[in-house]
Amino acid sequence: MEYTILDVETNESFNCREDEPLLSAMKRTHKGPIQYGCGGGGCGVCKIHVLNGDFICFKKMSRAHISSEEYADHIVLSCCIKPTSNLIIKKFSQD
Ligand code: FES
Image (cartoon, rainbow, N blue to C red):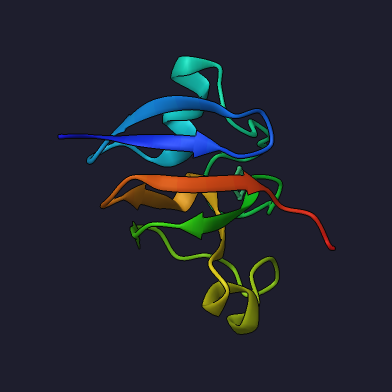
């Protein structure tokens, strides 16, 4: 099963398999807001905003990088989530 991920800032789509971390799909397709450091939930560089769609968090996200308020607003680390539906995403920004 694959899902379609739309990056609203570039208006480009790419596919992500249901068993694939979102960051890995961005790296594989060279699309989406690719920005990363550790690749394992520790640095916070891969922070994105999921505007629409569902996902699972398969790896613990540090509260130092994602507050509970941010998580409730679907601000997440792309290296720690896998899609369970099509997603609409954008790069995280403070505003
Ligand atoms: S790449 Fe470091 S937290 Fe995702």
